[in-house]
Image 1: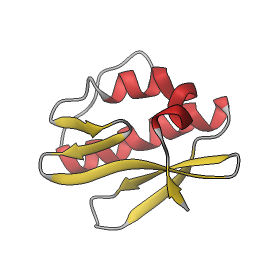
Image 2: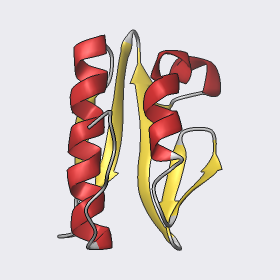
Image 3: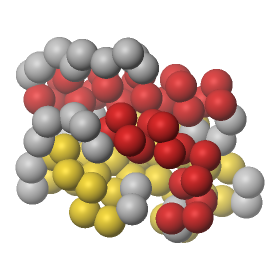
Length: 96
């Protein structure tokens, strides 16, 4: 299982743009996001499969598929829910 390279993330442009707008979330390198000083989200790829690992407020990581368009839309909603748990805020977005 390898970390996704920037080219692997090309189909996630809209979702990544949305993540970049979330308060206190910083993209330290392409597709690798931190909430403050703590890792929050990154992507992996294996063959044609792409997925995100997203940190939960309880401490563990959740693997969320991001290969298909349907996956990517569901991924963003799931990531938003985890973000809201950690940040203690409600996101306002047209994409969610």
